[in-house]
Image (cartoon, rainbow, N blue to C red; front, side, top):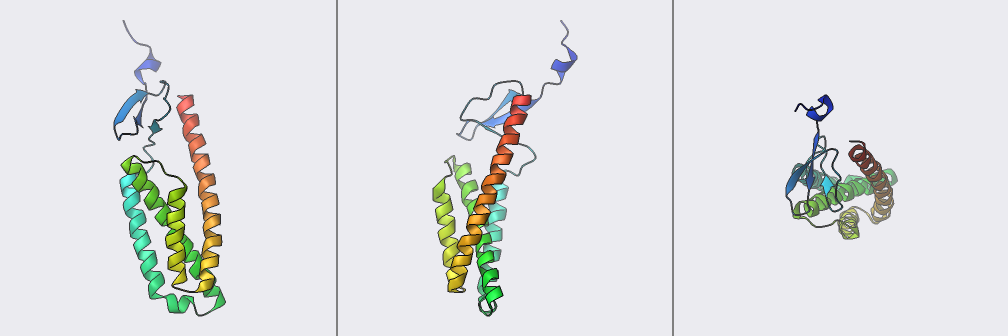
Amino acid sequence: MTSAPHEAKTRFIRICDGKGDLKELSASATVLSGFRVFDPSMANSGSSMLYSFLLFTVILSLQEMYRGKLASTELFTILGGFISSLIFLVLLTFIGNFQETCGMRSGWGAVIIAEAVALIAASTVHRVCITTCFLFSVGLLYEVNKLSGIALSKSESKTKRH
């Protein structure tokens, strides 16, 4: 019995069952709840965690090296708050990837820890940096949440389409 040409090109997707075990399903299979679909175009959690930790270290080191300059004028003080909000962003990425690697669920705890560390880093520069860091971090968190929703909806539409 010969198979139809469209069956010969069945695509497979990789999913994780929450315990770190990878399984392959045909793209036409129903994906059960509790499984995450891996997109091969995305960086894996380990490399993303490493890069975000390296960026965290570099940004924090540079901010501490130039904290005198960042506290010298009003504009540089606002820049110091923005730089601290970048610390928040890369630390949030690191914590989220660490939790994903360990199989834990990310939530508001990661956001609070990352924000607390960023605000402490901002407080070493100037007290106005604390306020501007918080405001910039709220804006970045909103945008990351929006981008995450867009990526999730695209991922779900790809799964449903195949």
